[in-house]
Length: 563
Image 1 (tube, helix red, strand yellow):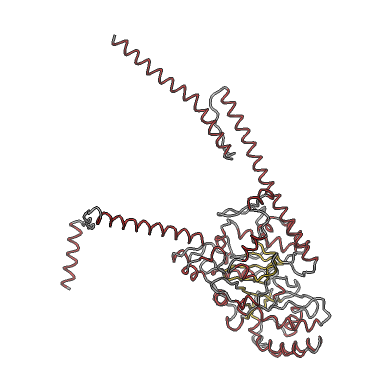
Image 2: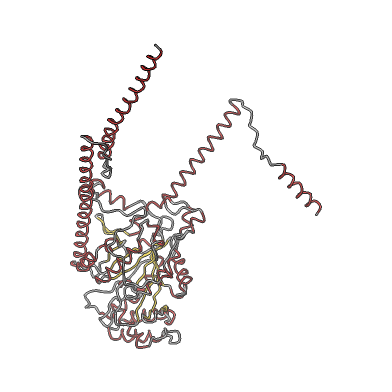
């Protein structure tokens, strides 16, 4: 009887094991199919099912894998087409706007750009030039990908070089513009200037913009603001310290200083000229610049005010303008004033007096040739100098836009950079700071939400989180010396424990708040246990030391006592 019971028990166990195995064999593929269906529903077209065994389930798994593969290809193609369509539509609108601006009479059209689209397509650069684009205001934060790492694009410096190559080949002038933030890229000032001086055949104007704390940075903490603040005086001294060029007090002049020479040009051009010179009438605190004369053969660069008494020269030009004696008298008087203030003992090595006069005349358009070829004047930003001249004017300038911490209504009243909006013109600084005029006007005239716009027009490719731009080629003909390429990110703020960005600052503030709340809860819990629950205070922890260590300490104490 006992033997029969054992046989029955063995049979039941075996049957149960076989049943579990069969159920596993049958249900495992079904579960895999279920998981695959859920992944496909969530848009994970890279998911695949590993076929097992033979029969209908294997065939079904292979069919599903084939379908998902087709869906993945179609999805990628659709996304690429959507982005391409959106980009072409945007490019077409931009080129149309450039053409319209030239059509209605604007002599210069400048595009502010990060350079990504210009770097991707030489053809787009040619189309832009054909439409009438004269210069590109190119974001340029430093030399090397490490110096641009705060933009979170993996190969941003390579993008800049390709953009410069394509734009210069298309005949578009290049004005690198650098946003300077103390602790982020203030060490790049000298490197950028050296790079530009090595490539004066393409770059004759550098624009630096000290940081303006607007937008998401309007709620910046005092600690970060003081650590990152960068001013025009910082720029002048950094140029001197990092390159040895110029004297901050002697060689830097307000941007509006150039209006004196604009008035002289108008005297020379006469009342019958189609267009007058651009006269920069902004507030003296809006920006400053330094003019250099560069020998393109030897790369010698000397501030103009080092060998010309610019202050007295400008006073002489004012007297000539006030006299208003006509074209030829103004030209002759201007030449005499120049020679009066010229110091031949401080001049660059190979510069002659006739060359000085010729440069003065050609720079300010007296000869009718070379109008706007890179000078003190700001109507000539970034224009390429004559390829046949040995000497060229090179300008280093800074424009300091306002924020809520340094706002000056006198500067706003004299603003020369107005925004054209549906509600009329408004000062650049007023539009981007204060009560938020940008948000108000954009809300008033919004034509679609961001989601709806993407649905109708497609979404452009986003480069963030270290993602690199896909470039067909990275070669270029620009001069780039290895010793000025930055290999490591600037870490001044990291060493001081100061956050770099608004998001980082908010995360730190959140973590500090959580720590503070946890400490407060612990304190209240301790008080509750003490006064409500009447629990005795727990004794403070005492560090227990080994006898050997204690003996050693006693010996040291005894030695000190004997001394």
